[in-house]
Length: 240
Image (cartoon, rainbow, N blue to C red; front, side, top):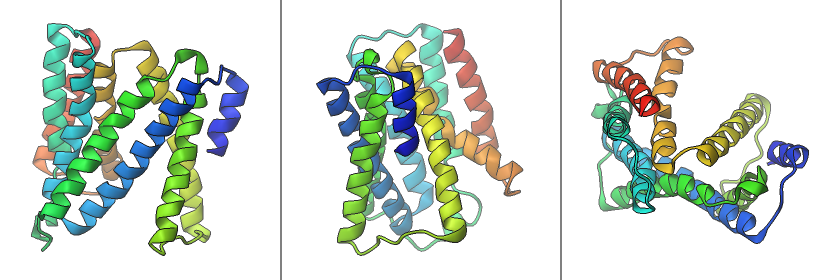
């Protein structure tokens, strides 16, 4: 929130009611998306929760974009289909995760669907913010998300100030999150929602690649196939 505010002041922009409203709604959707996603992962099977969430995150902006009149080319449409398949494959659990005793209950199902819709709506809502506001909608998104998360943490007695390594990791994550949000907004401002949203939803491929390089984690055969399909999808959507 601090970094985004500094950047917004530097780059200027006009703060209007639509910028505040759409930004705040975006932040609320982000907060609920994160909360429900990790709650679903903690209570349910990763093999179901992660791919289902991923497909909803990718599908929502595509569906809304097409409903609003966007018409990608045939090649781009094919790329979207490949991207959706890639998201499901790279989000599959690693070996051994399927042995977890967690069940896909009705509560887990609702949290999974809710998180996928909330994350997907995040793209849709911030895409509605006026371009002349520049980075200010992101500031209001982070303010509303921060307030909501703190209130939820207080209500559930989970608010603990991090120290040491967790604090350093949180600060690093904040910097990366700022870069990602700015890149997301700029991409949405110059391209179709249906295409940009599905491309951004391919982020699990980046997570898997970093897990391989940094953490030396083993990647399943299906995840590897998904990463290849993700590269193909990017090329198809860019060409289309």
